Length: 52
View 1 (cartoon, one colour):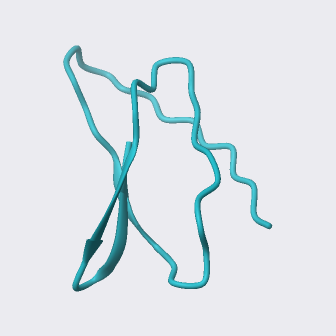
View 2 (view 1 turned 90 degrees about the horizontal axis):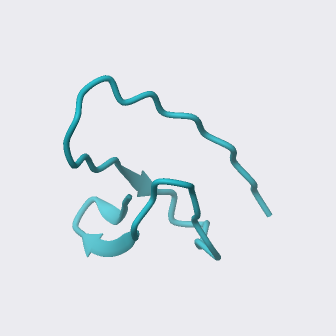
């Protein structure tokens, strides 16, 4: 199990997304945040991409 607390400072107004490739040995159980509306997981040739 891996738990991560990340803080991101957005310095401009608007709608933003953050994406990362999930290591193949990990699975996501949940992602949450005060200003997070949703997250998605997409399978790509590079691996599974998580977009917040």
